[in-house]
Image (cartoon, rainbow, N blue to C red):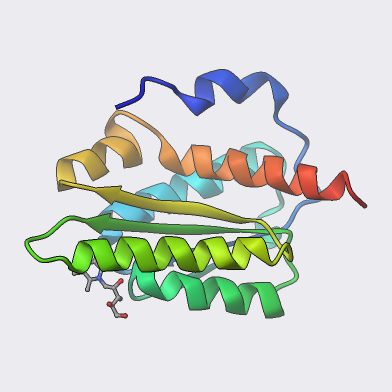
Length: 160
Ligand code: DLZ
């Protein structure tokens, strides 16, 4: 695994987010992991000036449903970026590969419309231990997704 840590390399250049509005969509599947990342993402957005009223949270059953959820957010939400949070843990069947592939491709297609930035916050891991490490015990992926979202809104606004 790469030793690169996004948070170590980006902390000096995080834009002011006080005017930004975010939608966060997360899953009931593996909620002990996804809720941790959700809470860390919200905490980070608030720390960077986002108003609590400008963060809208929705939940869907599994990672596969994130695509539809993001699509709804993009059509109806008055938001600048969407953070899609999920966690797919490898099991004994090929279902893992189908969910990972389907979810990733769905998010890619939505992003490619150029309408609104969608942050891919879906962990795809072999074990629950790896998921726990990434959601909080060793890394802070929720924070990373939030900072990525802030940067993408800043990037989007630079074209206005
Ligand atoms: C079915 C399924 C399985 C086996 N594993 C996961 C998982 O690890 N993480 C996750 O977010 N969702 C999982 N799902 C549910 C699918 O994402 C989806 O909800 C169902 O296939 C119904 O569309």
